[in-house]
Image (cartoon, rainbow, N blue to C red; front, side, top):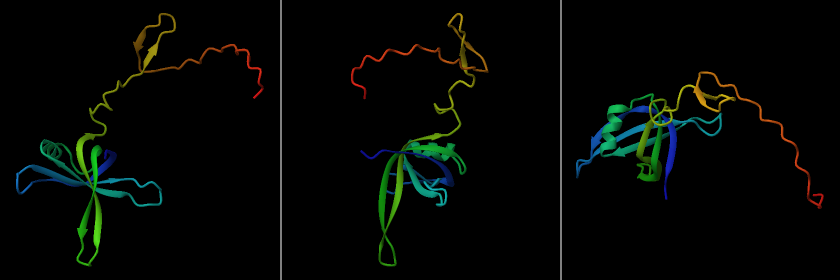
Length: 147
């Protein structure tokens, strides 16, 4: 199964179009993500979405947004005028999330829970002080083989 998850930044404003035959909404945009090595240039990828997702992308996502994309990676082959075929990757997305907004990742509580050592109840405070684990007595070595 071809499943792809990518965190990237939108570098070209999403464009909304419609397919010629069925008039299904189609949104396309260009995203950029960091290269594996620091000396390499960031990579770009064309992203497309169809149907209701396409209109959602057009309305809610803009150039400069950090996003998490989930979808299927495809390689398109294009005939070039120079006489060779060029291969271009394209991500057909099924889900998109804006990083830093209420997407499930940012819904986590902002304060850290602290456990009271006396009662064992949880209180919600803005500071959390971890306690050191209790020292345990070493277990005796019952193994006859020394390795």
